[in-house]
Length: 363
Image (cartoon, rainbow, N blue to C red):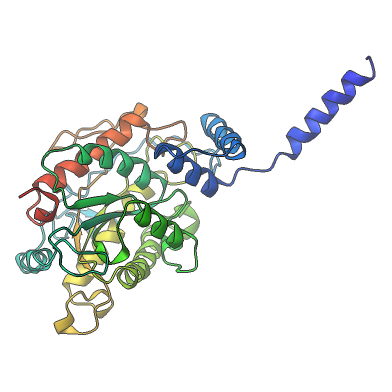
């Protein structure tokens, strides 16, 4: 026994040391399935529990320790005509948080075309309108909570089907690649929801790139994201031919981040990527054309959805919205249940009240 016990301990230590690193993409997929109530295999459950334990200890992709953020930034919605690293404020630029009248009119014309469709994409009284999310782990975590809230809200149209297409680890560059497995997973989720690709008419996109510091200081990292979002929109329009409108949102606050996954000021600066997209479309850039009368259609019409960033515990002037440390997990990046609830409520409030979202509401 005296010789056996050390041997066992040595073997255990060897196995522990040889334990493979966690595939966070796989862990994210298992998390999403578990949240939907799907039964995992015993092997999948063990892997899922190991990933949760690792995350609780602070293990993450791009997991180098992040210096504590002590800075403060004015939200894009409050910046006005002041400058941030050469860029003025406002979701639509020029200090404006509402679309120019011409773009709003175009948006209202486009959303007026949204109607219940059958699986073949033909108008049908008993058809469906699909709202699909696009993004990474933070997106699916908050959107899954939004779906729960919206599906039991009496204001939601009974013909609207909310599908969570966002997936853990699937950042901008992944959605820009049609060869990634995420597209097959999106198709699987549509099928499980009883709808088809031709019924997808609206998307909500919240996107980022992991480890933006490696892409360069502003504006470089935001320009990389913008480029990937353009390609992603092309892919989405090709996959979903009846896609009419895409609502874009910013990242949440990154000032509590303990890793380099997406800390400040990168989290704040990420919002310029969707802003530049919208501005380019308004300017008539062919790569983002949504109007067949102007040439080949490459993308849906783009609008801002809810702006999700706030300067930590400093309340936003318009609505008092803020983030506390307890809104985030140990990595300071992914939301806790409280953080998911905050974003879900913003999203629900937006779709229930925005003039372009009549398709969301019960008549």
